[in-house]
Image (cartoon, rainbow, N blue to C red; front, top):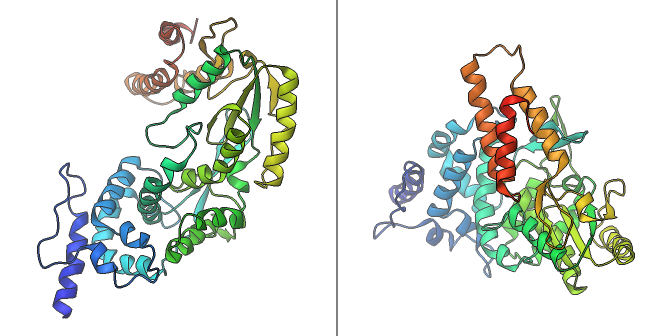
Length: 395
């Protein structure tokens, strides 16, 4: 009996030995248990067995490929992504047992602060590589179920959706005569998500108590900063794979309310623009929606950064729009300024590196910048501007 159990555990461990191959994972041979089949007798939630699906061989292999591709910095334990496959080969049977029994405990995230382009800092929480792997396997299962239920007006961190689609939708609303925008900025959104409210929303979609316990554990795992671990009572720290999905779940309630009111809007994560026909209507919408966000979502609108204005005077995901009946997409002035500043940082007179290395880094940055802002109209403006970087950074 022990030999058979060891053989089944070995079958799961071997699932991680070919994670880099392109072929589909092979089906278990006759006479051996798959991860899902084995878990059927272990699940305490008879109506739903999400954790068995989470531990499925193909799901785990897909998650490992994604974590390796994303790379990223190590968490508080110092383990790098390259070490993860070997670690899983040695410890997967015990980890799987913890997930199925609901006893897995994530480690605190590592606090990292990065400067925002417009001042201030953005606080990130970097999970350990192993916790990123666990979050990724959970994400893949939940996203398949939840994403089809989200609003068509939500474009951030979703399969087959992009910032460009959100910008194009905004452009469509303006062309239809909605020449005023209610530009909403949620203050420190990722840091202020109410845990109990979030867990209640998840519980309406998930009945597997092990999954609920695991997500709660990730939310409350704590933050290590300067060697000290602090408890976390609110927020979904940016830096882990699961955070964007949970943020979309929180803001889905806002999407549904805006749809109920028949507003024309586009949202990308916590960037939400509502398009109306007059300034008066915009001010009325701003007041009403701000009240809803405060009372129902228990979040705060940043009044200093939010405004009712002409779309041409605001930026949305790095873009703005031209005046006229047929508005065109243009690169927002702040985005151009940030690009100029970045180019200067990459090309100082004294940086202590070869010209070849400096040119390589600059080319990599400009290719990525062009890939995103090449969505402006006409596209050649972006190309002309980039070419100008060689002789002074922009026309």
